[in-house]
Image 1 (spheres, helix red, strand yellow):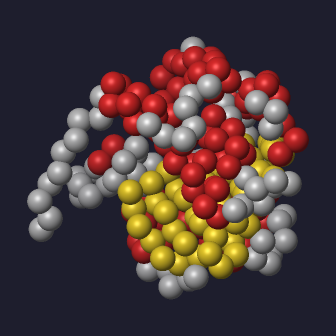
Image 2 (cartoon, one colour; image 1 turned 120 degrees about the horizontal axis):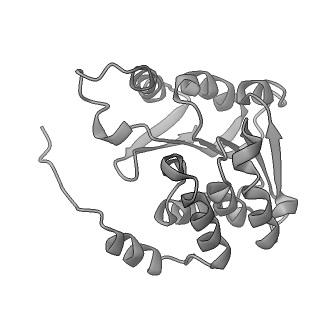
Image 3 (cartoon, rainbow, N blue to C red; image 1 turned 90 degrees about the horizontal axis):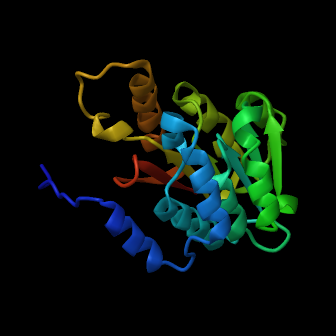
Length: 220
């Protein structure tokens, strides 16, 4: 058994990390974060600035021109991914909420990235199944309803090119994913997803025990 490692992730530490990254939080991101916080408890669905930096970096590493995001919420993560795209790249965002994504559009405009982002308001599975079946995607970010994670995976893996990345958020679910006492539907679905990703011979997988657990998979 591995020795447990603990690192208290304080607000001060996150600020330090972000300040030492290549993409500091600018006015657009700061304002979008503040607007999202006004939504109350649901604002917890927004990725933090440290995770946003990682999304930008991973997108740049793929030299991505075609990305897909499932679960856009108020658009923070989409903005970070779009910033990492290669010239001419595009991001397809899938969400079902007109209310939450209404906060996203003005931020994308202010950032000068609206022309890179296409938002489709529809069930994500419908949108995915309408995409061409061939390997065309450079990066995908799954951060939508947890019950459909396995189904999203099945639709996305065949559509990602070799060397492309599949990212999935919240896969450790506040750290209780390994506790058999927890049998809530979202946790059961995430366990099924984690098992499927780990056993999928089409990809290489690592889970980052940061944020709320982030799966990083590379298509072989």
